Image 1 (cartoon, rainbow, N blue to C red):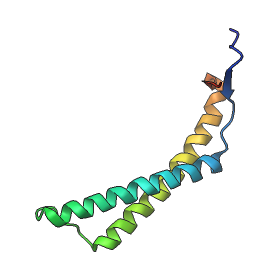
Image 2 (image 1 turned 120 degrees about the horizontal axis):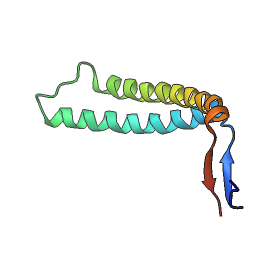
Image 3 (image 1 turned 90 degrees about the vertical axis):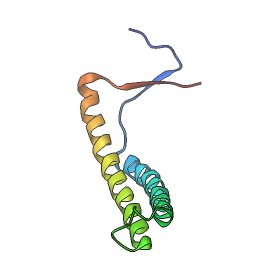
Length: 94
């Protein structure tokens, strides 16, 4: 099947590049969620944090950074391996 001229396929994803991007995105989102959880815990007395609030925000941010890095790295490696067998992702560019 012939592809239109403005359709491209992603043949390979650089694992470290995707890992870095996802670690930054996940770090920001987890930091924001940590701040929201701390804010809720201050106004809702039944929702208590097991640790200091600053430690909680730092821990959730680090969890997001590390988790995002691992998901990006493993996801890119899986994509590169599976794309040989099941095909690549097609994108339309203008």
